[in-house]
Amino acid sequence: MRFQLPKPLHGWREFVGEVGIIVLGILIALGAGQIAETIHEQKMAAEARENVRAEAAFNLSSIRGRLDVQGCIERRLDALSRILSAAGESDLQPQPSWIARPPTMPFFRGRWSAATASGRNSLFPSEEQERFSQLYELFGRYEDYQAKEQIVWAQLRALETWRGPLGGEARLSFANALQQAKYYAWDLNYAGTFAVQNGIAMGLLDSHPQKELAAICLPVTMKRSEALRRLKTKFGEP
Image (tube, rainbow, N blue to C red):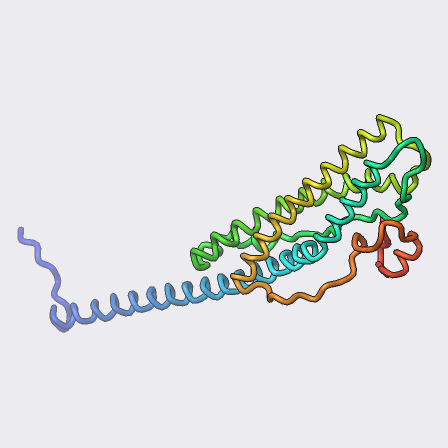
């Protein structure tokens, strides 16, 4: 028994041509879908990139605000060091009334985390990916160190209300706090300078920021009421 394929109605040539047209149409549709998906992904990546740049710029501007008062921090540490070194069997001279604290600021990482989780940061330029990764590692470290720094300065502010001579135990406690404060000041200045330099190179910051009055820059002997009046901070000072 011989088996014969049925012949197309209009012949094999026409049949192959029709199938080819169908296949071509399918391929075009698939290609168009792929192009549309690629364009959508690129658009989402561009939006993610702009969001991350804005977030990083905010964090960097906060760091730069800290760097602007590094000289004030170092002068305050030197003043406290002299006061502690001269402390004997009498009241502190001069008696500090406004020790204040270095500025502290929040850091935000949500946009970078979202871009990383979605994989859209992989569509950023490779050099920019690396720089953003370095910046966000610094942001995490900066946030951790500035929190520890604030605790140390809270210990040093106890000198504002200290009266009478310092005993051996108190002298050692304040000396330890002072050394920790010096280290944090050095480390935050070092890491912050590196971060800001990268930010300027990436076009995230301009190079001429506007400086503001910081609590740490007011004299150590200024009355607290006068310091608060000049600062006009919404939440006051600890």
